[in-house]
Length: 406
Length: 86
Image 1 (cartoon, each protein chain N blue to C red):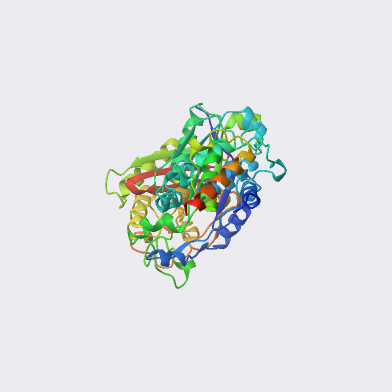
Image 2 (image 1 turned 90 degrees about the horizontal axis):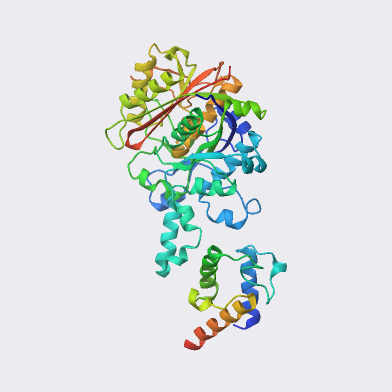
């Protein structure tokens, strides 16, 4: 089996548009949450969201390349270009090496709704324009990035709800570990437009704590009242260790474990068994005992049930209130299809800079979170190995173990 | 609408929305070979022409419309026939 390393990272998020900005936000506990007034007008119960502007790509990519990019694909382009640059991979390399892509995405609502409106207005599908089909499909990110970056390896989108980004890394890891690919672009992208989250808002799942938007996302806190949707994109370059060494790449970290499971239960309510199995499987794959994990990046989204079941599962597997835990969603909001990838980057930035980012707004534990070692103030601490959790609708679970290279 | 206005509006959207270099625009330019307009660009041009001139291009009417000059002629004919219908 091959060793799998990370050689590049790129991020476009509401807490920063490059690694340095994001590391500073994480260290300082800075929230990226605000209010989108348009959501009230549309009929949302909650106007809270991660605040993120769309990148300006005119002059960067030609028209044909831009036409098929949905909002989340624009974010993914920015993150992926940055990650490839970070990995010292240029177009010459991409044209001469077989590079693959697994990318998490599970909606493209704005593209679908706007295309429908354009056709309905004139009763003519041609009025959707040429980009509608390429923007409307869940695979908008992978289909566009493979063309832009001339990729010739494995090429597919992973749609696994809020675990999409994490599973994309897990699958990239498996493809390299088994020797099927040398280099795979992995990540997750998430649209943030008004259309994207209406159906989720309809479930009363979002916080309505609008008095101070930066305090709305309160994972694990007793007084949490729901999640805050957010988005952007995060990309990691996964590479065969020997391949990375041979080309003189800068190795950032090693992926050593991937665990997955499905709850076989309720469509929206999680449970503790499935997440426990995914975490345990990731540890077994990495050949680690629970005591060897220095930090857990929790999935915790700030919903009452989700956080409770994750706290129960972490407590069952790790026990003894020792492993530091935090949810960066307290700052970023829930980056949904992107979260499993972005949160790996957040944890690597902590690992590189020897700190644990705070679970901000965690003031009062409930009976379940009281049993965990939740870090609510930035803590200077060395991290050699971390576990990152992602869980999604339908009960899909993913856990990834990453460690410093030995 | 006279031909001069049609040429101006058409050239403007070809430059600004289809992003064709302005120096390439002349009556003899081949839509496909000189301006690089492909089948996907054509769909977008149909949408823009509907917005700018108020009629829908039908692919079958474009047979033989190979140059930019012939395209101006086609738009002029369609705009004027629409006006005379009215």
